[in-house]
Every structure is written in C-alpha cells, then in structure tokens.
Image (cartoon, rainbow, N blue to C red; front, side, top):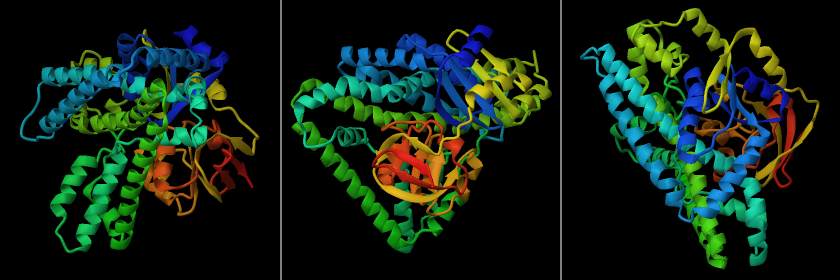
Length: 487
C-alpha cells in the first residue's frame, strides 16, 4: 500500500466530498464498497479519506475521474434502458438493505432478552455484507454525478445545438437535472408543513408527530454513532412556524413541483432527436437517485445503531468506539479473539487517513498524517473564486463557513453558507441562508437542487471556498456569473 499512498503526494488530486465519517464508514467507502462496486460495475478507483476528528474529506486522483468519465459515457451509449443501466439491481438491493436494518432495529431495541456472541457476529456480518452491495450502487450513482458535466459538454451539447431550442444550455441542464420525483428532503418538509397547518386548525397531531419522527429521524445519521432527530426537534420546528408561513411555503413547493414538471415536459416535447430524449430521461433519474442513495445510507446507519450498541456493551466499548473499528476488527472483537487497544481507537478518533482501493487498504494515524495534510489542504491567497452557477442571483452577505456539523445551528438569517458540500442535515441552515457556496458538486449536487427549491443563489464547485473565506467575511455571490469574491 505504501506505493499507492505516495501517489496522492505526487499526482494531481481532486476532492470528492466532505462529511462526518467514522473509520467504519471510511473503510467501507474506500475498500469493501469499492470491491463490490468493481465486481458489479467492473471499475473502481484509488481513494483517500482524511479525517480531522469527526469531519472528513475524500480525495481521488484527477486522472481517474477522466477514466470514469469515459466508462460512464460508454455505458450510457450501450445500455438504452435506465432500469438495466442502474435502477433494477440497485432498487432491489436498497430494499433488501432497508428491510434488514429495520428487522435488526426491532430485534436489538428490545431490552427483554440477551444476545449470544454468535447472534451478534452473524447479524453484524449479514449487515456489512448487504451494506457493501448497497454501497456499490451508491458509488455508481455518485460517479455518474461526478462526471456528468464533462459528459454534458461532449455528448449533449452537439445534439442540443442541432435542436435550436428557445433556452440556453445552462437553463436546459438545470431543468432536466431537477428531479421530477420528490426527494426525501421535499417529502419530509411537505409532511411537516401539513402538521403545522393541522395543529393550527386545532387538531391533535401527537400520534402523527410520533410517526413523522420515526419515519424521518435518520436525516443527520451518516454513522451508527450519530444522534438521530428526536420528537423534540420536530416539535421545536413546528412551534417556530406560523400557520400563514406554513401554508405559503407548502403552496410554493407544490407550485414549483408543477412548474418543474411543465418545463421538463415542454423541453422533452420540443426535442426531436430520440437519443437526446433518452439521455434527458437518464439525467433526470440520476438526479433523483443522487439524493435517494444518501437517504438509503443514512436510514440504514440510523436503524442499525441498536446492533452496534449491543456489540459495544458486550465488549466494553461505546457505540462511537465500535465505529472506529474495521469490520474485521469488530468480528474479532465480538469473538474476543483480538480486542483492539483503546489507545489505538482513541488515536483514530483524533484523526486518521484511510487509503486504498478494491484490492486492499491501509489506516494511517499519528505523525504520519502530517505529510499528507500539506498536500490535501493547500493554502491560497485568492480573494475571488469561480465555480458553477447552480441557481441564479446576486447577493452580498457575511460568510458562515462550515468546518464541522456542530456549527450548523449557529447560522444567522441572511448569512451566506459556505461549505465543502451540503447534505439533508444542512437544509435547516440553508433555509436561513441568503446564498450557498460549496467547494464540490455540480448542477445535480444536493446544494444545487435544494437551492433551486429554496430560490436562493448558489455557486458550486469552487474547489477551495472553505479554505479562503472565514466566518463573518463580507462576500459577494454572483450566481449569474458563477463567481464568489471577498469584499
């Protein structure tokens, strides 16, 4: 692995995403999920995840994204039906995965019985095996999103130019990449707004609120150790919203959904080229599954938490400590063949690097991390950045830079949210923001899609916004031009 590690110090790299990732998830992403992805889709990448405490960023070699672009483009050309391209196998796997974690949640939430070492080992192994398969499909749709911009330029634009549609290329792509099918974020919001309205009309919403919490509490969970939303979280949201505002927001969501559908259908009806029509449908479905894949992962991580708690209590570890073991180490620990020293776990919790591919992986901690940090976090004196204009508009405001998820609830109304990327747990903060700026992502990223839903300016793919802007910096976001600058 040492030779593979050194490549990240010498070759051009690109940041893929950032979020709260424990070592368990990092090893799953880098190696086990990638191994299964290679088996199903016949390609994989070298991948490095660097974590400073609970917040981590993932990187790959720039030339590997170019390689993936060619593979995805060829696959799009050769497989004409989206069901065969992704949907059939992936949805079957996702459904089996969610069925399993719900079963495990019910089983291990019971306090009426104890569990044998064999039961814990078998259930944990079954969970990780199915999760690896689900992660393979999650990876595949992620790769589609990562390379869709260059594919659009090379594959779509030549076809689009012949159509002579009454719309710019950028507007065309925004329309076709806004999912027709409602995402989890939108469905949850609609249900919550209806609870606000019913409460204001004097209806008893307690049972509905309990159901809502159980259905959606997994939103902030990327690891089994993450805390889900409680009923108090949703009570607070409901209490802070007026009947009038809830009705207005619900009306806006429904109106926008209708408008998006009408725009999409109009474009499809105007397009004459059958290949372009087919690709438009592919893009719209990819934009939906780009969000849905995260819903599957987060719900799974939340609902399997009771199993991880039982394992921890059996071997004298907290849930979080269990999440800083590799899958093989967990099995060994359950069997008490090789209980990892807690000092090693604590060092991993302070920071780590996991690097590898479908063949193997390595965990790096302590002083060995430093040489990578210099490369992964380069300093820049830039005061103006250019990215991708994901939703138009031009505003000025104070930067609110997300360096860890604990900061999200401290954003002020009217701040400009600056983050490496956004995810569903960012949405509450995004609703208060005047604009959104991200390091990563494209026109189908979470930040792009949700900013369009909220009607706020958004610039994505700036690469280093979180590195050069600081909290309370006065910045201008010109999402008409795709620029962000410090004033």
